[in-house]
Length: 297
Image (cartoon, rainbow, N blue to C red; front, side, top):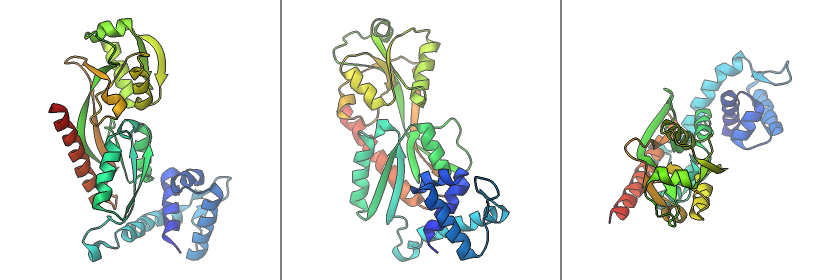
């Protein structure tokens, strides 16, 4: 019996299906079925009801899941007493909103790997709602994202920076009044599937601003590239650690009523890698502070 069998069982419980578990543990549906057959044979007990087309955990299987979680957590922290520095060896699976991939995440990752050379990181970029789901399911150890509308009791939210929404334009735009710019320039929307896109839409509606739609982008990086080429303007966050393209954009204040998004790290309260994630938060905070000092000089 291997720990991977328990992890697959937990993934089935969290996702509700073999197919969902296959996505989480990165194997095929057939491999998930084979693993569960092997686990049942080893235990000498049936964990699934296979009377229907889609296998479901039976009562015994549901009762076994908490025990499997306890075994996995014990396995992942087995070096605690020996090293005095738990969870610094192994892998950290980290989700991140795309706007952090160009600056914040690579700089922070570099610092973290310098501290812990044996650490392996897997970075999964996605929008905040999708990252929230993956943290809840346990397929991500943690995620850097916008604060969810509600943080359930089984999750741990650690904020680190508030980004104001601003009007983004290319350096070629010389006008300073955001409403005049929005009235005269093509507007590039950020997808409504993202929390930032929704906030921008709400701000435009609250201020009764009608824009000249030109295109819609699925990520802030692509949106920034379009704005940088003066194909239009957009409302987006003043990214705390921008990439070189975003750095060169003009960021015009939307005034005192401008909305903002709170960035933070989200993880499950029962995550076995909490000390490592706390170190990640410390390094993120250092990178953000250094960027702020650099901009003020």
